[in-house]
Length: 84
Image 1 (cartoon, rainbow, N blue to C red):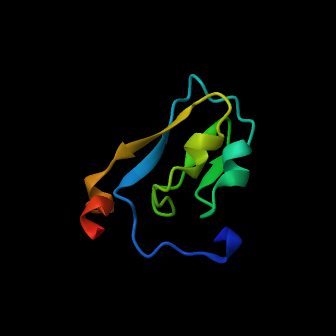
Image 2: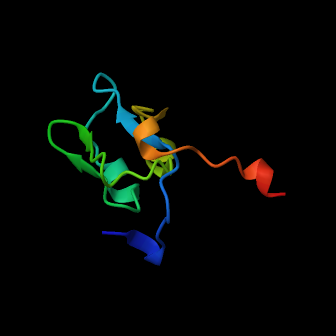
C-alpha cells in the first residue's frame, strides 16, 4: 500500500529501526508511513522489504523511538548535492 499517490523509485539506502524501550505502541508511525511498512504488535514493527527509508515515521514518532540506520542491502544513498 502506498499512500498519497506517490511512489519512490529506489530506496534511500536507509531503513527505520525501532527502539523497543521507547516505543509506546501508539500507532502514529503506522498512520504516517506512506509505504505501509510499519505495524503494531506489542510495539512498532518495521517491514524491511516495504521500508524505503524516507524518514517520515522518525519525524512523527512522539517518543523518538524510531531512527534511520544505514543498510547497505538497501543500496547506496544518493548525494543530492551532486545534482546541482
